[in-house]
Every structure is written in C-alpha cells, then in structure tokens.
Length: 289
Ligand SMILES: C[S@@+](CC[C@H](N)C(=O)[O-])C[C@H]1O[C@@H](n2cnc3c(N)ncnc32)[C@H](O)[C@@H]1O
Image 1 (cartoon, rainbow, N blue to C red):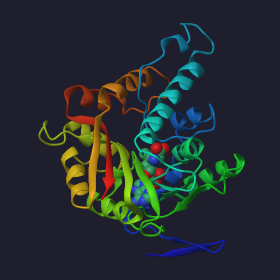
Image 2 (cartoon, protein in one colour; image 1 turned 30 degrees about the vertical axis):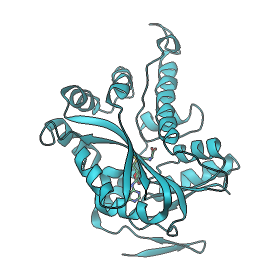
Image 3 (cartoon, rainbow, N blue to C red; image 1 turned 120 degrees about the horizontal axis):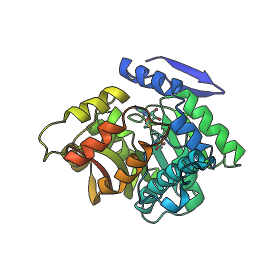
Image 4 (spheres, rainbow, N blue to C red; image 1 turned 180 degrees about the horizontal axis):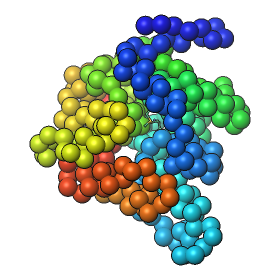
C-alpha cells in the first residue's frame, strides 16, 4: 500500500488493485443524474430514491420546465431516502460523532449534521469526492462538523468506540461484509447503532439473477445477499433491530427515472429485478452490543 501526505494528513493508498479501480471509477464519475440533481439544493447524493412520486410537482406535457421539475422530484425522493436512514439511527446528541462509510460527495453527512447538530466524518476511496464534499462543507460553513477523508472503510482513521452511529448508504457492495461489519463494530460504542441501505439479492430467488449480474458489471461491484448481511452482523456483535424492505418504495423512483433524459441504461435491470423478486432494496439497522 502506498501513502500520500497532504497538509499533514496521511492518506493511505488503495488497499488492493480492485480498490484502485473503484477510486478511479468515482474520480471520473460526473453523471448528470447525480450532478444535476445535487444542483437543485446543494445536497449531492449518489444513491436512489424512495417514496411516492408527487405527480402534481411534475410538468404537464409541453411544459418547458418539465425536465427541471422531474429532476427536482427525483432529488426529493433521494433526500427522502436519507431521511429514512437517519430516522433509524436512534437518539443522536449534538456532542455525538457519526461515521458515513463510503460517503460519496457528502449529501447524507450534511443532512445528518443539519438534523442532529453533531459532527459527521466520512470516508471515500475517491479524492475527487472528498475534495468536493469538503468544499461543500466549507461553502455551508460546516467544515468544523462535516469532513470527508480519503480512506478505506475497512480500516478507518477513527478511534475504537468513538461513534454513536455509523452507516453505509449504498456503499457496502464494494467490500467483504465480514471485514466491513468488524470495522463498524470496532468504531461504534456499545449501544451505538449501525444502519445500511443497500440493494441485495434475495435468497428466496436462489442465486443472483441475470439482472443482478448486470448491475454488478455496470457498477463494478459485488452485490451481497440479504442472508450474508445478517450473518456478517451476527458474527460482529451487531444485532439487527429493524429489517425494512424498501423495494416497493423505490420502484416509483426507478419508473420515473426511466422516463427522463438522465437514463444511464441500467434502469431496466433494476426495475426487472425488483419486480421478479431477485433483488431487494433493504434497510437494516443494528445495535452494537
Ligand atoms: C454509490 S456511492 C454512495 C455514496 C454515498 N453513500 C451516497 O449515498 O451518496 C459508493 C461510495 O462508496 C465508496 N467506496 C467504495 N469502496 C470503498 C472503500 N473500500 N472504502 C471507502 N469508500 C468506498 C466510493 O468511493 C463511493 O463514494
């Protein structure tokens, strides 16, 4: 592993060639579906949305602002997803410390600080994302409370027992789940809460479907099964407190997105796999015991 020193902060290099590929992927990533949605209110997400579409907020056919209205509605659903994640963190005080593992451009961290008033630190493999997140935090005057680090989430720079809460928001499909849960278990204080929102393949289907394989290839990731999540948590002192199937809540987002000019080509795989039951969008909240 190589290390770089910037402003006295030591940034570890990717721990594997795969992690280097993922860092490159996210350094190069500038899809309109992410950036134009973030431009709506300055909260930049790299995750999907949940909740019912508000059709009254969409433009009628021929409305010159229809595209912008659709973008704003997709963005509202993505922020609603983060709200549900934060709802499941339990009681968080201003003095508490939260960790966003795989923080992207930092939208979830800003929302967590705005809700709880606490300090939130995140890690991402992408230096571009960390710079972007730290720049946004400075623009919002939140740099003392919201900070992104270029770091591997399997080996974070945080102290043992430091965090009251931690989460993965669509970032756990890039790592070994046992290693990931071991690291969350290390940084969480006893009684702390871990939350993940993730796509997972459904053990009831049998094996990953062709749609799941297509999603893996598209994002260079490795979608785990629901069973693997629960096992890795159980093996690492993380006891599920809630398992919520968000699949019916995310389908409207995908069906709306598929009608937009921002399509990326992967919409069909998500919609078909959610409908055939091979893929699920779940929230799992677990207590560190
Ligand atoms: C789909 S994005 C999700 C970003 C963010 N959680 C959100 O909701 O907007 C996946 C993120 O996981 C990060 N990631 C993947 N593997 C990682 C690792 N081993 N350590 C740290 N971050 C990682 C990527 O750098 C990227 O920021």
